[in-house]
Image (cartoon, rainbow, N blue to C red; front, side):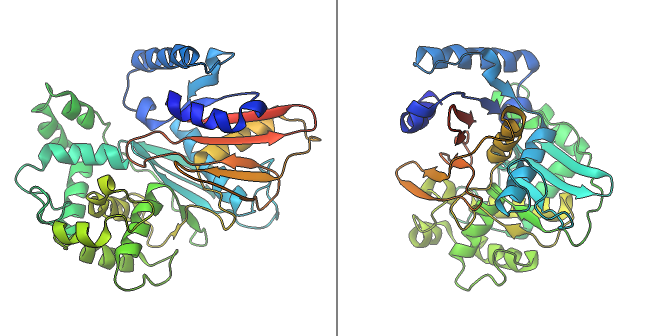
Length: 381
């Protein structure tokens, strides 16, 4: 993390005013309170020792699941020009998008209904968390892996059924987990509260934007398909399922030969998990959120990624900045090996939005604005 921050700092080091580090489900849901505080303290002093000086310990904190969901909602609607940088509606009577986020440890859903903003985070339903729990049980066969990859059988329907049974069958899950209490990885994988899905039915007219791992998994299946996925980026989930079923059934040697290095968001280390990722996406969208169609979105036409970090920054900016401040107009996108520059659709936010491996590393995102007097920079992890 220190190296990740230093990489970002080198690019805008002369403009830094504030660094904010915000942790999400990987810390919030998987560590006890004392462990969380100890980790944040170590991070604070560790960054100091690496030359990254933070003025205040409060610059490192953990956000709630509700806030994480709400920030994704802010970003999704800001980048679609439905909210301005003060998070006010651009068109008073225009319906706002719903937001769906899927990370490594949790998933979030946010939308406006008649009672106001519904924002909910589900701990343990992230891609990494579910996969870790599945590994506990996939001893004889693994329907979520391709044939020839360990004990893989490459069966999408069986994979979805396995996920459904593991997540929704509390008694069975507890029984399975009881046999693994001495194993740290398995114990962490099983430490999940029973599921309680209480999601008010959204209006049918709401357009849901599915970001992060929702997009990565669906776009991989689209990319690996021999035939186009009709309606992309808003396909029928039944069509996505059919493409995923075909992909999962391919033997592992063929998958490696045909698709290694062929999808921008799928490294070789992630290729073997794309069948599972697709199954999890279909399970969450249908079983948890009861949706049959969403729009998969990673970035806008101007190149800005849709991430909760931007939504956090907008909220922070709204609270900290005087309404009369002017804001700069350049956008910088940082990837691991290249830099590109473009214009933000509203010409008012500077963003550095990606430096990540979707399953294993924290997301690096920096969003900053400049006034005529004092530059302000926020970095959110």
